[in-house]
Length: 385
Image (tube, rainbow, N blue to C red):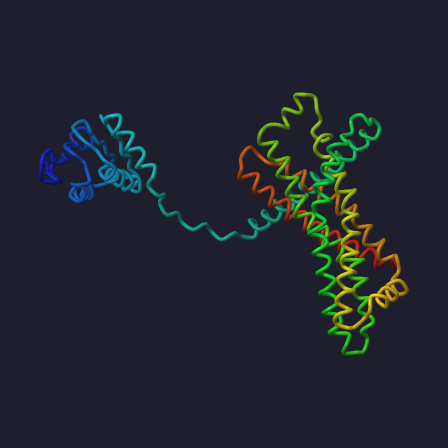
């Protein structure tokens, strides 16, 4: 293989592949015969013995057949030369041989890359800056979506003929009526758990009757509307994103604009307004179910009769707790609706984007609802309500 005129037969048999290395006009490797799986071991050994210190031209004019194994051996040869900084050129290859060779070369795994350097202080500051800018941009987009909804709602009030009542009723049914069973079950079980855990603790101090205060304040002021909003966020934010995102993927939103229809008026207003109407009602239903579950468990666990539970509830619990809880509902509804519609409009023209934005909408809506509830709790505590 080291002589300019030497030719080595790499395998025995009919039309065995051969290599002839010539350096008269640059380094040229002449291949001949059949480059197949049967001769792959000898072919690989012969190619491995070739030096890789100069550019190489491979002449395939005399190659009779080439299968994937032979193409792989040639691809390894080319990779070895590239690693050494040398080029490999293919000449006189038949079209189907060239296509197979390109496919195999493209399928080879990438060379192992060096591990990226550890980020320094500048890189960390840059990452923090980009994250902060992205967060602020996202909040501004949500505010823009909220402003767009408010503008279209006012327009619908000024021009009632543009308001889509049928769509509003449909979304009220989807958002509210269909969510009643899961909301009732959730609130009932929360009331049961609060009564059971509270009774086991208050019994130690002989204060079992105060379990009514524990259940009422927890459910009416915090847990009833919060857990209802979380459930609605999981159901509705994802539904809004999926519906609007699917329409955007199918270019139905663009078709609306072409027909002179405003997507905000048609898609956003009925959905967000349905949430504004139905979430307070769902919160009220959750409060009733939670109190019922607490009363039932108090009767079973403590022997506190329903009449005594009702009397203690009416005399010891102010209606302020109910108003405080329900006052959060419109804000939670706006958060859920705006996040869901915004995520739907951010969907791109592929199914992967739809799945990502649907998941992001649910996570964002639930997180925002919890943060808003914490802010409400601090606010009401500061004003003494």
